[in-house]
Image (cartoon, rainbow, N blue to C red):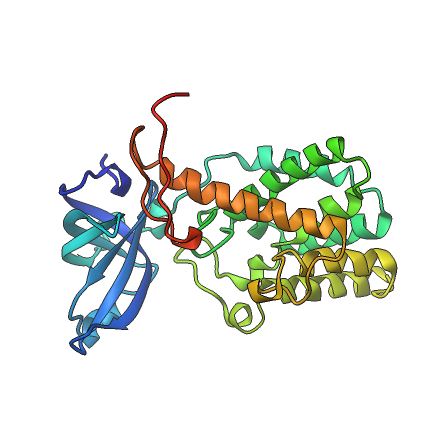
Length: 314
């Protein structure tokens, strides 16, 4: 069965897809249009619906399944859909949004095993118990949520996949640099994005929640650490707790990138670089997976709109 990312440039198609996002914008002529991002299990692609009426804006909401007719096009080096027509899927058609959600393709049991191995290497008792308590808060959301609305690991299970990938890098670094504090490094990695289970709405038509917009995942996880301390009877001003908070609060690296404090611990600096490296790798690898060897990827906006080349040899 043909899917979105199977389409070649100029190819016409008619497919059922999920509206991942539908942003209302205004064109230069003053008319509103809908900037869609459509999705199926192969991935996602943007498309513009020009001169949208109020009725159409109300009808085509994120999370709805539509029957889309169009042509695969390219805009500024990025694959795009030239929309010819669309309508909502009927009840007798495949209208379940979960059928169109992209997944990481790794069994939950595999991720849980890797997580449990890392937990055993957190020896400082306060940090170990706080991390386990917050994992219990998140429950299944940690394994089903994306890591972002778009850009890196923006698919079902992406949050846990991103975290486990970072843990694998962190555990490897501990063998090279034994002076690194394993409890702070691994505990911080596990918790660094845990606030996204509250910041984001879920894997289907991912949006920011009100709390997510107002506070952000970094502040949210700081709150979760305070909650865990209160329930466990820990002093929130004890050194292990303060340093755990620091590595989480500082993981974006700079104030202008969203962290309230810059890294002042070796482990905080490492978490920042591991996080950035894994996110960057995922964006590039995802883009390169869509092209044949000997070609450049689409422009990757968070990476200064650079295009990356896929070699013809290994």
